[in-house]
Length: 497
Figure 1 (tube, rainbow, N blue to C red):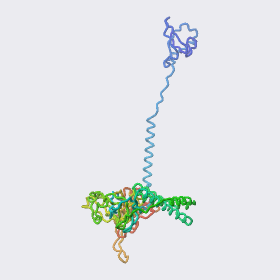
Figure 2 (cartoon, rainbow, N blue to C red; figure 1 turned 180 degrees about the horizontal axis):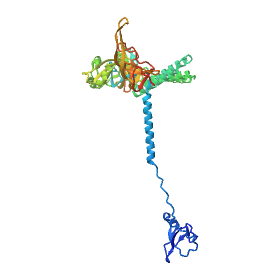
Figure 3 (cartoon, helix red, strand yellow; figure 1 turned 180 degrees about the vertical axis):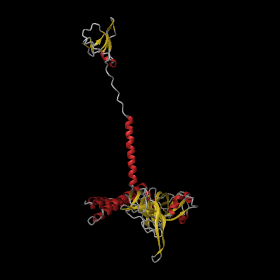
């Protein structure tokens, strides 16, 4: 009788996983297969076994099968529901908290200073006169750019050949260095100099030296070199070192004695007194100096370069006053006219600091037109004497006061009480709506009126001491006040929980 039997036991014989099995049904062999390749999900076969001797071993397996593994399902719905519940609980808790507690954020009011600037291209206009020479000879200057010269003073010497010029220049350079080294040696013992001051002077002279070289003002560069030598010596002494120049002095004295110097064949003198400049740029006579203050922007655009006379060897700046002419936009012109007349002028590529100037005029055809800003200057040195066209920055106005965030500015009412000249109350107190800030003192808020003197994108600067007519209740924001920059339902007298 056919029955189902387990693969692992066939007719009382255990079959291993690696055995090959051939089943005979009705005398015909079935196909051979290996146990390892068998599909265990249907782990039974029918077998004909009529001669089975042991009924106990004929136990029927028709109802026995290996159970399939159950799939585990992840409870997505339950987890999602739990997350939503937690979120709702957190949201409700936040609503309950914010309804009972006010979140108020403050910032400390601090002192701040800001400047208004105008950036423009400037043209330097000076009263300049050519120094001309009609004599034959090779020129060697005896003064440096920026030096003052009197009328009839010598600015250059004439020599017969280049060798004489070289000998004369070398003799003067050695003599100048020798004089400086002797002065520094004598002053070494009594030197009392602040280190920070020396370092600042060194940085300034290095800038002057670089600018002089780039501008081909070699006389000024030589001066800066000797100034730096003296400053480095001072720094050595201040920091506890000792500078011994005696070997160098002996070397220079020996070199000086071996130079055969000539006094030249003639001199070149200046007809007028003023400041000497050896370089010429062709713009010396482009503008009428007497009409500078009334010029327009179109006049500057029409400046033409003119070739200087062929016998000109330099020029004299005859007046201490000179001008910077700056074409500006209509917006810049309005900003300048609202500022003070005295300004600080920065010329970054020429000097490291600023020079003082006075705004004489802002000349425009109409308020919508471009303007010409006329700045008058009276400071001059060898570097400034040689500039013509430069990019400059003009600091037109400085604003200072108490800085507060724009987020802190609100409008609210203040109580105004009028008084007569004797201080008696006149009439009934009244309410006036003004701009101000809320200041936290302890846990109470106070509203203080402000007078804004400058407004930027994110902050305002307030006058710390505005005039009484402007300050209606006599109280304004003060330094170090805790100014509220965030909060809800703010009002004067509110208690913060």
